[in-house]
Each structure stands twice: as C-alpha cells, then as structure tokens.
Length: 239
Image 1 (cartoon, rainbow, N blue to C red):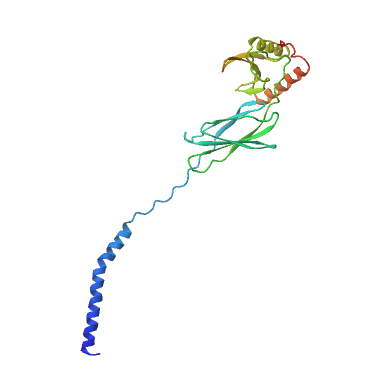
Image 2 (cartoon, rainbow, N blue to C red):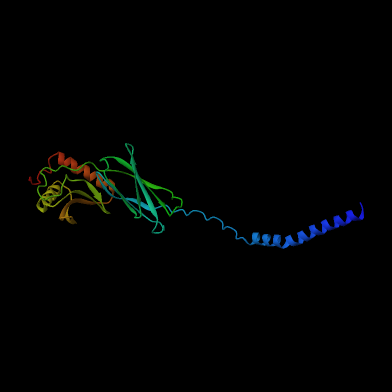
C-alpha cells in the first residue's frame, strides 16, 4: 500500500474516533436516564376479610329466617354476602353492609342452610360460616277470626329473641288478644300479651315462653298445635 493509501486509512480512523468521542456523552446520558427510572413497587396482595364470627339464628317464623353475626374485626366498609337454600329451592342471596340478614317468602316446615361470607373492597372473600334451621309450621288457625281492626292475615308462628318466645299472633283487637292468652294459659301454656308499635296503631302480641333453647320453643309449638286440634283453644271469642 502506498503513502496515499495510508493517509486515507488514517483519515478514516480519525473520523471513527471523533464520532465515538462525540457519541460517548449521549450514550452515557441515556444510560444514566435508564438507571434513574424508578422501579415499580411490588404489587400488594389483595386484602382478605376475616370470616364473620358468632353466626346465629336470631328470629324464626313459618316463612322467614333472620340471621345475625359479628364483624370479627372487619372495617365498616365490609360487604357481607348471605345465602340461603334448601333441598327443594335454589339459592337466594343478599349483599349487605349490616350484620343481619332476613330471608323471607320461605316454605314452612322446611330445613334451610344459611351461609355468610365477608369481603373488603376487591379483595378475596373470607371463609364461609354457616348453620342450618328449619322454618316453623304454618300459622295456627285459632277458632274465631280476629275480627275488624286486627292484624291482616292468619296468625303466624314466630320464635324470637334470647330467651326465646313463641309468638302465636299479633292483633289490633286487645280483647281478642287477651282472650286468646287466657285460653292458652287455661291449656297449660305460659302466655302473655305485649304491645308493639306498628303502622296505623298498636299490635297486641300473644306470646308463650320464654324458653332456654330453640328445641324447647319448637316443642311448645307442637304442644299448642295439639291443643288446638283437641279443641282446647276454642275459648277465644268468635267475631
């Protein structure tokens, strides 16, 4: 290679070195920017609610079941899903902010399963808690209609509260309520009449009890039905 060729090669090498020197700060700046980009924080796990505690049967009638439970430390914004089903019915669900669920329009004398779960925001649902309960028989048809001014519809069995009371019926007619309680007491049942405020006036509740357990209350329902069938409750006034 002649001197002219070496000179040309030298010029090309010098140009490459100059280009590399000019490019180096830009590469360093780009590298620095890449290093300065903040790292994404690790994704937080979804919150999981605690399972509701102290799930219990609060009130029972021939056509309704009311359940109650404790929040178990969950915040106020917690949502609760309460489900109920039987062997012959599909599942009914309620979504609630409260810790009480009332299921209505149930079939009498039917076993139901009640299940409750909690969830916070979009987090995972809690473990489910559940219990079983059987609705009471259909309402007691005491001889003698309640008459004008009484509660509409037939008497409906209801067991409620702690200690538990069996409610035979609730009427606007005070005299009829007292006569029914007297007939129940004469047949050996401990009946009382209490008042409750309702739309349009006062209802006179005829109740028997109290009882220490749900089983004892159910047994009393069966005894009252037997006495009614035997004619022992026919002392209530006919309207």
